[in-house]
Image 1 (cartoon, helix red, strand yellow):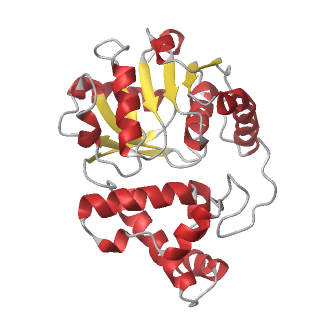
Image 2 (cartoon, one colour):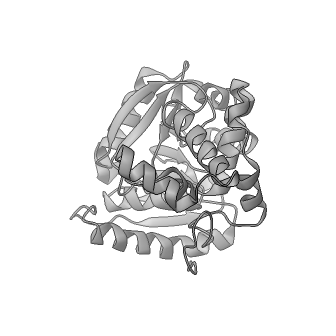
Length: 285
């Protein structure tokens, strides 16, 4: 992929959209970031700069020229983009609408990537103008620190689209592992159930969040435990993903537990709000 001729659209200026934008521009790929929320858009460049500094401190920032970032509220500004990455909230109806809108203005053959956490790619493909152009790429948070990406090939994903998505991820210096479609794919089919059970253990008074996570780190070698991971993902996103998995698998084990729902209702969504299972201090835009 020739970075000089690329312009990527990232849909959604939330946690993942900004982080994916950071990853792309750090690797020399210019980005047009789209969101209907003008407040989020106004703060997005500052959040990207902060993450670029963090990536540099962690030794994961490439030593090349950082590409430009533009922001817009209109998908009509995306005519001519060479790839699209969708990273809006994990709500099926919202994702379907955003993907339908963007594929109406992009050229045939433009790869469109959904960063869905749990919604089957083929379900979203029914909403787009060209299902063969759609694939999934489940980035881990933060994507500029975690190199491996779970790539999902839907039943209607074309060979050309998959090849372009893999080339795009390679240009971002990511390692791709391609899996088949299905609710939650691999990572979240396992991880979200684990988070839910860990939250239920805390709810029942069996152990504190710190002790749950310490056991996973000390006994199983995890870098972070399930509840610290949940705070990083965002507890609202965890609850949304669990509902998707429950509805599409029929497995009641994915029903979000009461403690998780109580925290979401209280606005304690994890790192992005300053409090979740842990207290993360004051949040700055």
